[in-house]
Length: 230
Ligand SMILES: C[S@@+](CC[C@H](N)C(=O)[O-])C[C@H]1O[C@@H](n2cnc3c(N)ncnc32)[C@H](O)[C@@H]1O
Image (tube, rainbow, N blue to C red):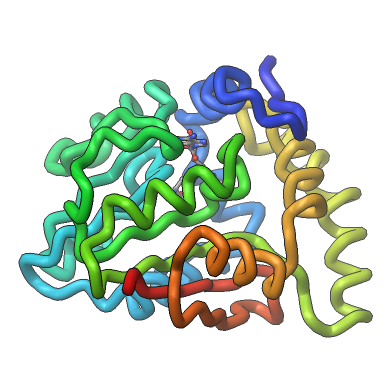
């Protein structure tokens, strides 16, 4: 069984997702107590894709996070570096142009997209700052970024309960529903180690994104960060 360490070696991360691909979407729904669907709707609203828009959904996994953009009539390109996740995605969504690519060396031209988005992916990328810079490169001037990622609950008592829930409940529940429970130990650890809302916004600014702002979902369990390429 594969579990990536917090060093996030790309080969370990890809192998870990290869291993959970078959049950990934189901496990997500169970562990998030159904919140995933609400978070995906919020991402779709924040991206605001219109028919004909070119949208990159980076770290798209099985492509589930790309579906709202396709439904809006955009030309969405789901991209991921786990061939296992892409294979599973191809079975489920044969119409999506699933593309193999590493977030830190994207196989796209400068300014190729009107919008770039990444859901529950940036935390797993070995070089966060490199990925933020690559996303900027492939976005056209005036285009936008939306990042959906686990974050830090803002109300302290809730944050404490949540951290306990994560660390204690996640691995046993994952044992029941996931093909690789160890991957969910990594999930809990990586969420704790991830920067808070302000910290991620600062990194986006340093990578060159303008007008960076965020919105908390589920009390800050998840945050949606957005920005514009000037
Ligand atoms: C938790 S899944 C998210 C999938 C999807 N976006 C969703 O919301 O369901 C994270 C994905 O990030 C991908 N990933 C991690 N590091 C990556 C990298 N450097 N380049 C491309 N994809 C990467 C993994 O392969 C995995 O499929």
